[in-house]
Image 1 (cartoon, rainbow, N blue to C red):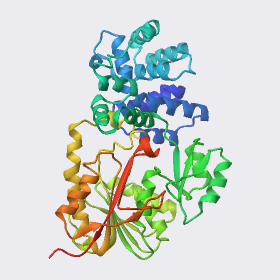
Image 2 (tube, rainbow, N blue to C red; image 1 turned 120 degrees about the horizontal axis):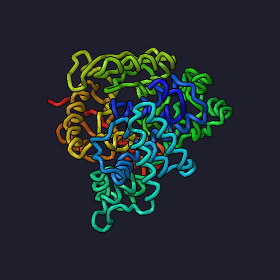
Image 3 (cartoon, helix red, strand yellow; image 1 turned 45 degrees about the horizontal axis):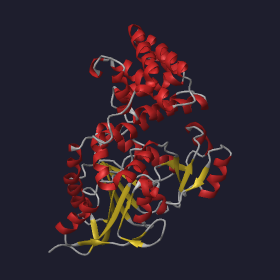
Image 4 (spheres, rainbow, N blue to C red; image 1 turned 30 degrees about the vertical axis):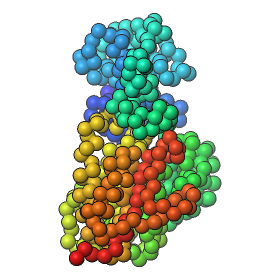
Length: 449
C-alpha cells in the first residue's frame, strides 16, 4: 500500500479508509494519525479528508448505488475494491467540482496498484453507473418513509425510524443534515499559558477563520483548518483540540482551587485538563480509565499543557476503590454511551451501532454512577454527562439514579448561553447547532442511614 499512499490525495484517502472499513479504526483517530505523519499540501489534505469523511458518512447510500450496478453481492466484492468503489461513487454523487472522468480514471488507477485483476470490474461498474445515472430512483417514499429517508439522508433505517418518532420529519431531516455537514475544528484555550484573545489574534495569521465559541468561554471555532503542524507550531501548549459541547462539562462542574476532583472514564483527558486549568493547576485531580494506553494520552496532554495536578489510575469505573471513598468535592462521570449526539464527528458510528446495542448502556451507566457517588463528600457534587440523544441514557437515567439513591438531589447550574437556572441540559444538534450532549448535576444531601 506504500506506493498508493504516497501518490495522491485519493491514495491517502484509500489508505485511511482501509483502516476504517477493514481494521475498524475510528475515523478521527485514523485521519489525524495519517496527517501527522504525511506531508500533504493543503489542497490534498482538504481533498483527502473530504473524501474520507464523506465516504464513511454516505456508506449505506453508496453501497445501494453500487449494488444497482453489479450482479455481484456486496459480500463477494473484494473489500479493498469495494472501498475504492465507495470513494469513487461518493465523488460522482456528491462532489460536483470533480469531473466524472477524473473520479473514474483515478479509481481504476488505484485498483491497478492493489488488485490489477479488479480494474476492468471497477471501470465497468463506474461507467455503467454514469450511463444510467438519471434512471436510478430510491424506493417509494409512501411505502417506506424511513427506508427512503435512510438513503436520501445517509443514515441507517433503524435510526431514521427512531428519530421520525421523536422529532418528526422536519426535525429528522435537520438532524441528519447537521450530521452530514463538515465539523469545524474546535480548540479549547489553555488559560494557564495564554488567553482567548491572544490565541484568536495568532490564529488570524493562519487564516483559520477563528471565532469565539458562544457555548464555552474557553472555546474557539475554526471554519478553516490550517493543518495540525501549523497549529502546534503556533502555540504548542496554548490549546487543546476538543469538541465544543465537550467543553461545557468542566465549566458546569466549576471546580475551585484546592479541591479534590475525580474524573471517571477520563481518557484522553479533555475534561480533566480543562478542570485543572479552571483550578489554576492547584488542587488534586484523579483521572481514571479502564485502558492503560489511554492513561498515557492523559499524561501526554497534561504535560504539554503544563498541568501537574492530575494523577492517573487504571480502574474499572464499576469497581469501588476504597481510598477514594468520601474523598472528592466533585466527581465527573462522562459515561460510556451510544454516542448518537456526535455522529457528525464520529461518522463511522452510525454504521457500527444497532438498535439492540443501545440496551447495553443504561445498566452500565447506572452501575458507574452509583459507584462514583460513593466517592463524593457530603454536600459535594456528582456531574453526569453523555454525548448521546437517547433519553434512556440521559433524563430517565438521572431519574432512576435519584429514585434508587434518596440521599441525592438535583443541583442547579446556569445554562451556558442564556444564564437561566437549570438542573439538566440536553443539547440537540438540529435545535442548538452543536453536537448532541447531556449533562446534569446531583448534590449529596447526606449519607444514607
